[in-house]
Length: 419
Image (tube, rainbow, N blue to C red; front, side, top):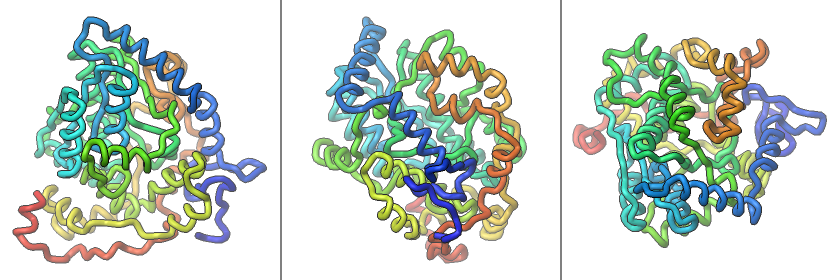
């Protein structure tokens, strides 16, 4: 770490984090924001009682229907546990819903089928066209923004609403936990449907036909007319991911895939190569800081581990180049293009800001996540905009290039195994 850089006295967020501010105790605004969430979403007996009441309401709304709730699944730890929680602990009848962006790992697919089969839960999957998705994915590389994986995130959220509307389900559950995943700073991640549409229109070669997009009017219809609510049960639990992983392995023959969001190969590439190499973004800052706040990791351990290089499977780089038809030179050019952010492209952000009060009401009615209201509807100051544009100007503490040579030859046999 740069000894001249101010670091939060509680977590490991430092001056490289966009829009960070420190109070007179040296605590960052993200820690203070987390404290507010902890008050609003208690855990322990109080949190469990709240969650049971929510489950009773879900059952009442699901009466005479085949399913009570949609649960988004990726094959990862959080969503797999959420299926168990919904069915075995809360007594609900969940429908597991998955969005397949064609980059799932073999482990993710096996996890989804093992857990749903053993719990006897139906699975609804939306498959995007492989060529279409890869064209959109490549467009985000050309746009030179951090969010190359945002089409998958929007695709998943939209698929959850599609399934809920199709089966008349009034509740959606997702496995996010601010206590284990943390609070991602604005500028490190942004997503909305208009952002995807405009980037694809500018850089892509195919029309968007099979990627589900959460356009604003569709979201308003599903939220305000269909009254589909979104719940995050893990926000009410003392969620210990290490213990949950052991539980899933023992009970469901579930497999660990090596790291947060690594169950999907495009997400793995974004988190372990693209973001740190191009934008000096290491999402472990979010995860480790969250674990410190939750008392599951010491600050000393986090400060030590953040200096370690992120693991990276060099086969995935070869797969990215092969599937997206990047020549070595073209890929190098993409990686070296000037950095841009969502501020450089048309998005729904001005609309979200204009109707901030409406989205506050939606958050209070569980029709929109609080994290969306806090991050997407607040108007940035000129100083905050500048900090977002400064992304990538401060090197990561561990930053040396992974041991990957862009021109390293790979056999045709190996490529055929990957694609």
